[in-house]
Length: 275
Image (cartoon, rainbow, N blue to C red):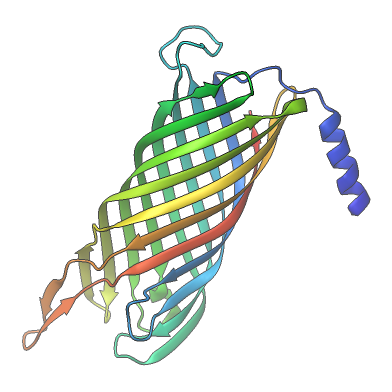
């Protein structure tokens, strides 16, 4: 196996490299991550953790306001569209609604995410180094299926609308190699938590609009004649404050339901092809 990996690496490095960047770029990637969701403000913080797997696609267009098929030195603009789907078997360690300690394994959680961003590319001299500041609009939709454990747990969905503000730094290296680092701050614009079938019949929707996200990655890419390959370690983090309270009654008592402050962490790796 080791000899095969060394041979494959040597073969790829020997392929001819691209002469320059293209105006239109598409990448497809496989992703895996260590996923954790916690509600740390509670007396006994529940925890969802496990391994996620998924796929992502990204399109980047350069020199949006110029004609032709080549990148224009005068038109620095770029547009980026990224879509992602992740799923995994998550373990739950917490308690039920009545306070009974409870654990469950292999809960089939998943989420969709998409973001559209735009910005400008600034080349720093002739060094091959460039800066890519950007901002845009993104959305994330997560489904937690704790209700399927048969324990009395409920189905929870989270919807975030956010504004990504970021900066990518890219260095072109020799022989078709490039190295880039990306940092992004996500401003939460709107958050909704929907809890369905609580106690078998109650459904609640909470507004949870205060919070932010952080993410960063480092990408190493090798370009060849007709395609490129890349590896990109990443980290993604969400910090969301307590939701607004929702009052419900059973005819005798009035209860207030609040989604507590929570944190989501993902550490992972993307491996993909660029075209």
